[in-house]
Amino acid sequence: MNEKYNVSSSPHIRDKVTSSNIMLYVVIALLPATFFGIWNFRHENAWILVVVTTAAAVLSEYLYEKLMHKPITINDFSAVVTGLLLALNLPPTLPWWMGVLGAVFAIIVVKQLFGGLGQNFMNPALGARCFLLICFAGKMTYFVYDGVTGPTPLAELKAGETVNTLSMLLGNIRGTIGETSVVAIMIGAMFLILMGVIDLRIPGTYIVTFVIFITLFGGHGFDPQYITAHLCGGGLMLGAWFMATDYVTSPITSKGKILFGICLGCLTGLFRLFVADFQPIPSVIQTNSKPFSSVDREGYSSKTIW
Image 1 (tube, rainbow, N blue to C red):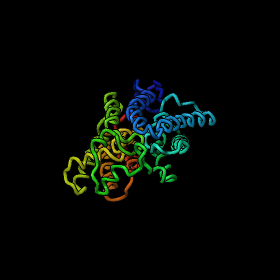
Image 2: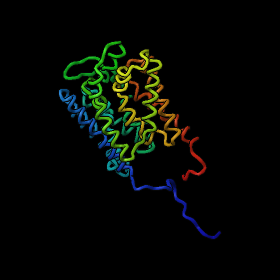
Image 3: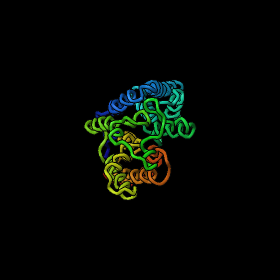
Image 4: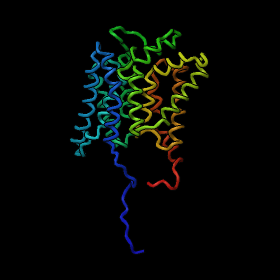
C-alpha cells in the first residue's frame, strides 16, 4: 500500500504511428486527385490556386503560432492537408486571393482559435469552403471545363438531361479541382486503406446507404447508369473517403462510424433529390460531425483505457 504510482494524462496507449505520419499519408493519397485536377483544368491554371491555397494555410499556421509564442507545428503536415483539401474543393476559376482568404479562415478561425490540431469542432477545410460559399456564392458555383462554362453533370442530371457516366468516372467534366476523377480519388483511398489510416465503416456505409436512398426515392428504381452518375458527381467520393473520415471530427467507435455513415448517406440523398440544386456534401458532413460525439460516448465500455 506504500507504493507510489506515477499517473500521467491520457492517452495511456501509445503507437509508433504519429500524427505527422498520418497526415503525410493523407497528402500522398490526395496527390492523384491533385495532379489530375491540375491537368484537367490546365487551361484555367488550377495549379496556381492549389499552390497558393496550400502555401497560405502553412504560412498562416506558422505566423499565428510564432506570434502567439506557441510551438511551431507545421512539420506535422496538418496545415498542408487543410490547404490542399480546401484547394481541391474550389472551382478552378476562383481568384487566388479567395483561396488565400479561405486558407487563413480555416487555419486561424476554425483550427487555431479552438486550440489547434485535435481541438477544432469542425473540419477546417470544409468550414472554410462553407465560409467562401456564403461570401462568394457566384464565384464558388461558377464551373468551367476546357474553357467552356456551363452546369455540372449533376445539375444536368437533376434537370432530366442525359449525362456521360464514363466521362464522370474518368473526370473529364466540370466541377471543383479535386472532385471530378473518381478513378484518381479511389487510387488515393486504396492507399489509405492499405496503410491502415482509414477503414471501410464510414465511407462504405455512407455510399451503400446513399445508393439505397437513391434507388428508393430517385424515381428511376435500380438504374445502374443513374446511380453511377450520382456516385460520380457532386464530390460524393471525395467527401466519403477524405472528408467524412477526418480523425478529429468523425466518430471513433465502430457503432458510431456505422451510424455516422448511414446518416450521411440519407441526408446526402435527401439534399440531392428534394432540397437544393447545389453540392451538399461539405454541409452534410459538417452538421453531423459533433452530434455523433454522443454516440461515441455511449459506445465506450468501462474497459476503455483513457
